[in-house]
Length: 110
Image (tube, rainbow, N blue to C red):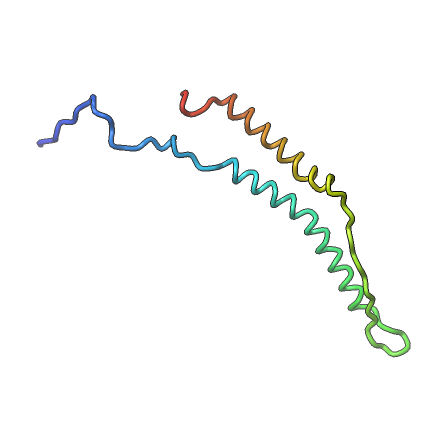
């Protein structure tokens, strides 16, 4: 069987896959921020459902017609508190990822 001889000193034709890394940190920050947005979203959804169901189930005792109320649900949040709500968890995650990255060593140095 004739196999072509390869030069052991020539570079390989396969590319270095470790050099092309996926942005895992971006995925983690996206998941964190989506979960941070989900908390107030779920609270507002629950408040809306409670409000809508109370309007739907209450009837006027005299006529039997449904009674509707006009409710305004508002949540007052200071802009600095809203900013800190996102900045603090993202900063904690950034520090944790950087400590983990530098403890593990960069893949180029291994």
